[in-house]
Picture 1 (tube, rainbow, N blue to C red):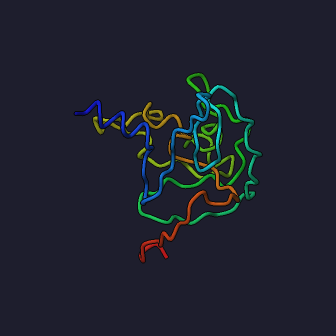
Picture 2 (cartoon, rainbow, N blue to C red):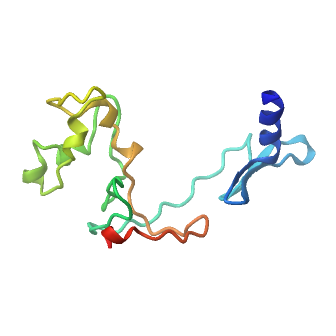
Picture 3 (tube, helix red, strand yellow):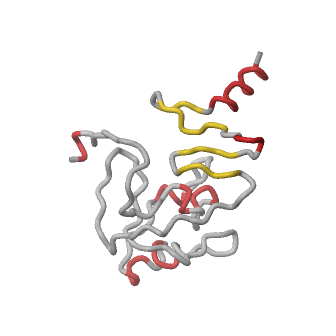
Length: 152
């Protein structure tokens, strides 16, 4: 039963808010994928979209409680890997004041067992898992999200 369900989903796509967002498109046996960003043949690497413009040093408001703050500056060329984290060069507690940057939250120094660490917790080290730059980009889908009253 489960195999049939998985097969059916891979053929018809995944539905979100009543719209199919991904659908297998296989004209002539070539193979392809249709998404909100357009149609792409799976065997061909599609050129990257142009980079979106990022507002420079703009204060961005939160839309919901516990929202990871958006990054108000360009991060192009920043390395965030096992060996380096460019974000921490400005935002760690050690350097934030001298760099004029916002300190990272104390929650980033707590591990899964709620122990407070001397350095950033490994689960919070890869900043770009949660934090993204604010870009002036056209939304892929219509959105009528409204912020909670307490954040207005």
